[in-house]
Image (cartoon, rainbow, N blue to C red; front, side):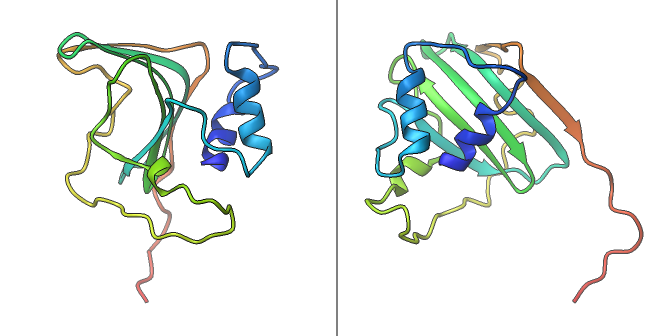
Length: 154
């Protein structure tokens, strides 16, 4: 979780905005004994696409369920991650890395990855019929190149 958060925190140039949770997040990142900040989910899902995305400071409003959340998003084959910070009880239907948190950062745990159903490539980037999504100033999207030559099967 720290490496995911660290990658997303690094999105943006010369960026260190102070906010109500800045110190709490900094302390979590630097001290491996501290718990994940309260009311935060680290959702993950299978992402079998070449398109890559890093999104910082996005917000979503779901008119259908009244959900409101701020989130950071990272999508690279084969997994996508969302650091989800809901402002109410809005939860997503993905597995959450927070449930695998252990007391020791050196402990190895088996993490479940659902191979089906495969979410849409633009999950949390394009709104559904009941959602509105807003992005902050730092978002990066790129397509990786197709493999060159032949792929050898072993």
